[in-house]
Amino acid sequence: MPWTAISTRNETAPIVRGGWLDALRFIVASLIILHHFQMSAPIPLAEGVHPVFERGGFLLTNFFLIDSGYVLMRVYGAAVSRGSMSAGDFFLKRYLRVVPAHLIMALGLVSLVVFGGMMGFAPRAPEWFRWDQLPAQVTLTQAFGVYGGLGWNAPSWSISALIGCYLAFPWILRGLVRLGPWSVLALGIGLYLMANQLTWALLGYPVYQMPMGFGFFRALPLFLLGMSLAWFAQKVWIAPKLAGWAGIGAALLLAFVQYFDKHALISLACISTIILAAGATPTPRPSKLVEKAAQVSFSMFITNEVVRIAWFGVANVLTAKYALSAPVQWGMWFAGVAAAFVFAFLFHTVIDTPIQNRIRGWLKSRRKRKGPALQPVVSIEG
Image (tube, rainbow, N blue to C red):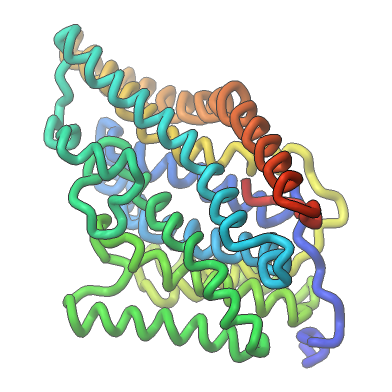
């Protein structure tokens, strides 16, 4: 492949809805559901099939955090950098995107536990529903060393960590835009490796094993890496054919190494390459179906753990009461996975979208009151 396949002279393809990045978001959200549900199978998939179903959480969380930095940089980087969107407006937009759905699901889970207890159905693992853990989770402060946040809708720790990343985004951006694309790429990779080495030296484990209570310190190096990949992608044109083959090769390598072990740094390089390749591959015919699937991905992430708790709370009672056979238990498990997808779609359509429409209307009127309208931004991350 000649060097002209990578160039700073050609225009980088814009990212659009219904393209490869959207497809990746839905695939990863689907795998997150499978990862969370595998432990509730009659035989956990990590034990009965392959350990990758357990360590998949590490891979998928890394993808989620890197992709968040990448997409936000590509969508909002220019507007925040030139000042047409203030740091405060950016944070408010992102904060209001995630918090309403989180609060609704937290309230729903609390109601489920309370009313279930009133009807005589106590949780099988009450240690995961301790009331002293709830305040930090509801306020999304659990990733900053605040006591609590364990149990309940546990995956929300990554949303808490991302809120810190949203705050840091404008200040990281100021530093990145002063550097060239290759320098930024080297900086993003180097800072992650430094953070990883630092946690090994001080704590005895890699940065991706930081406990949820300090999740921000796990998330920030990955989020910054995603921003660095995006800045590189905006400045350096990669031939679509090269990007496509690189993405396919990285996906195959990721699957291959996971068959044997976690291989954290190799996996991280593969994930970064897949995201970079997806963003560099043009989408001449965007898919409305893929666009809709990606839009539902946030609801899939924020609701699946609550659905799992509710579904298998009932399934476990039925299994114990009627001594259900293994095939019936597997049938209920597959139905539970399907229920997670259905519930996420309904939540997105009936609850999350109307709320976000109201919020967007309020933000638009707020911008008009503040002064001249911001230049329009086409968002693919919400």
